[in-house]
Every structure is written in structure tokens, then in C-alpha cells.
Amino acid sequence: MESRKLYREISAFLALAQHESFTKAAEYLGVSQPTLSRHVARLENKIGAELVLRDTRNVELTELGRIFASDLAKGADRIQLAYQSAQKMIEGKKGTLAIAYNTIPMNTYVLPILLRDFRAYYPDIETSLYSIPSHEQHTALASGDIDIAFCSSPFLESGYDYKTVSKHKLMAVISSSDSLAQKNELRPDDLLGKTLILGESKAWEPFNIQILEFLNSYSIEENPIIRAYDFDSLAALVMSGNGIGFFVEIAKEMRRPSLKVLPIEGFDKEISLYINWKTNSPNPALRLFIEHVLKTTNSHVTEEGVIDEISGL
Image (cartoon, rainbow, N blue to C red; front, side):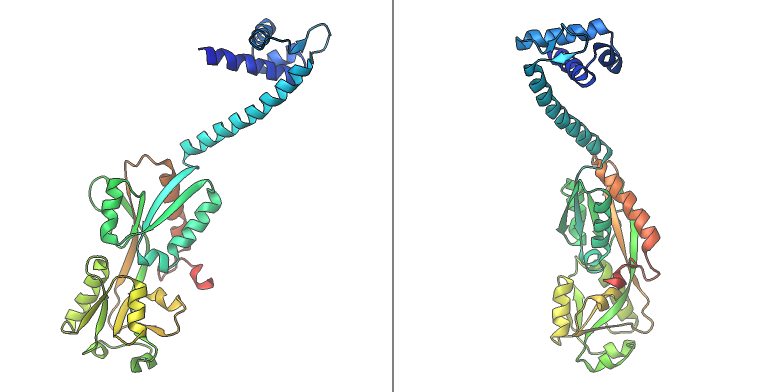
């Protein structure tokens, strides 16, 4: 209660200092002039000195009153900033977002471009990025360690929601020194007897299911297989001549001159990229990010499923 009284008294004094008139200050605050006078008098009593000279027609502050008003105004600015900051947090325009990603959203530039444009609109939202394999993102989201999961699988359980962000065509990735690099398209029988470089079983499950189904349909399932944990590992194995790998089409934009990315005849599979989140998340910034992702991807994703700015990078 005492803090409320002090706030009213300070507000009355600041209004008086600003308008230099009891009448105008009272109108500004929406109180009667006697009420305004009482608030100022109580403040002077608490301080133990006069803040206002009352023996003139116009309001004049004492020396102490002018210094005190100046100091209070600085504090009022900070209070206003604090109020604005609180409002931003309530609206989701200030806060933090923890985002998990796998190899696709980062290597296709989907996530970096989304973040760049999102931060242009909401610079007060701090984003933290965590490289987490798809099969581990569900646990991180459930525990509250992250707010959003960018991965290759939708979370279909109750309590979660998801949206498709983009789609990416799967391609063969070969060394530019391989004799097959002279071709514009591989045939399935080009893979016979070749060592295949696939992703690690759990982390790359959506990739592997599509690839192995295709290979099995052409009886290529007996090929030797090397497992790579991430794309950098896969690229290094391919470039050093260990075998043929598989990744999304954007691999050809990754500026690795020793790699060549080729389509495979009859192989038209795609990998989808999803965002997943908890429907009961208390983070107000999450709603703004999801709205931004949906608006951006609906407007700027090409037929190949890649944000159209990528070609200009």
C-alpha cells in the first residue's frame, strides 16, 4: 500500500514539474487540484524539504525540486523501458528460443535463412541452436530442453504438432574422380558391387528406409555398407574413394569440388523436413517463430523444396 502512495506522489510531482501548473498537471493525471496538492505535500513531508515554491502565480521548483525531478525523470525512463520489455515478453517479442536441428536444415540453408529473417523482425528474441540427431530430438523436446525440433520425422503423438517446412530430392553422391562422374545420371546397375555409404542407423532412419527400399527392389542389398554419422563424415568418405553416398540434392551447392551429385534413374524419393513443437508450450516466442516459418516457407520454397534464396548464396 505504501509503495502505491509513493508512486502517486511521485507521479503528481513529475506532472507538476512538466506542466508548471497545478491546474494542467491535475487535468493531465485526471485528478482534482486539491488531490494533486496533497500528493505533492506528502512527498515533501517524506523528503523533509520543499520541492515547490508556492508564493508565485506560476509553479516554480526549488533547486532541490529541479534536481529531484531530473533524477526521477531518469528513473521514469528506466521504468518505461522495463514496462516495454515486459510487454514484449508477454507478446513473445522478447525471450529465448532453443532450436534443435539435424544435418538437412543447416546444410540446405533452410534454418539459417529462416533465422536471419526472423531476427530482423524480432531482434530481442535470443535463439540458441543445438545439433541433435532426429531420433534424439523427441526426448529433448519432451523434457523442455528445446522449444522446436527441425528434423526428418513428424512427431505424431498427442501433445505435439508439426508442419512440413520443405522437401528435398535424394541423390547419389560420388567422388569426382570416380569413372561414374562422367555421367549425367546413374543407372541402378551402376551401383552393383559398389560400397554404399549410408547414414548411421538411428540418426538417418528416414534416409535409410527410402534408400534401402529402392536398393532392395533392384537386388542391390548385398553391397558392402559403411555408416557415416553426419554429412561431413559421409562427404569425406566419398571424396576419399570409399564408395557412393546418398544425400539431398542441395549437396551440389555445398562447394565441395571433389564431389558430384547425380540423380539415379527410377529413384524419385524425397526427404521432408519438419518442425515439431509441444502444443502446450508456455513460451510465447514459439508462436511467433512458427508463424514466421509457415509464412516464409509458403512464399519462398521452390518446386525442389529449397528456399529460393539458396541459389544466390
